[in-house]
Length: 250
Image 1 (tube, rainbow, N blue to C red):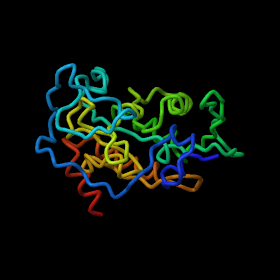
Image 2 (cartoon, one colour):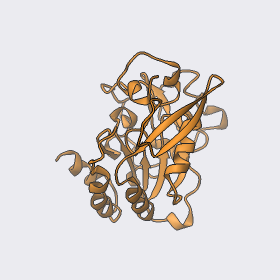
Image 3 (cartoon, rainbow, N blue to C red):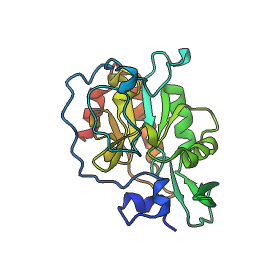
């Protein structure tokens, strides 16, 4: 059976490819720059919301949807920056092929048949999530479908770190990729960070990204642990752009 990694490697499609992150094209050109990237654009009228990305290709335009993707910020998160965190190959690796040391086994129904998805947690993911939940308003944002990603998040996030969960229908389908449009969140972009292993996911807002290496099964990986001091410092900054620019220029 195909597993989600094959989709990112742009292998041939299978029935399973509809569940996990889309076929990735890493040579994606961003749309024309929006000069008003530092503030939240005004909502459009109710009938101005775009169709779902699995129905038609949506070409991004400056106008946001009628309703922002995130609810109002909780009082306990006031003053915190918003960190958007990817799931597959960032926090976990999932496969339809049995894995002897799987942390979770999640049943997923595909075309009337239940398949077992074997999930490995990235090393230090528990410590990473707990600390990030203290420092930031954390949001899970994945291009996978909710029927797979939601139960994985239930098992992964034992502490209620994720204030919200966003799935494929919240992405914008642009040039063959499901893109996470941060301008649709309803948060000031100067206080939004996205943590993702796929540059295609944040092609609209690369200046907001903390790139991470794709993770599959290396149990000696320390990237999430190594990032914590950086995020502790970032949580105290006035805005994120200068710090993230310095990170990218290293």
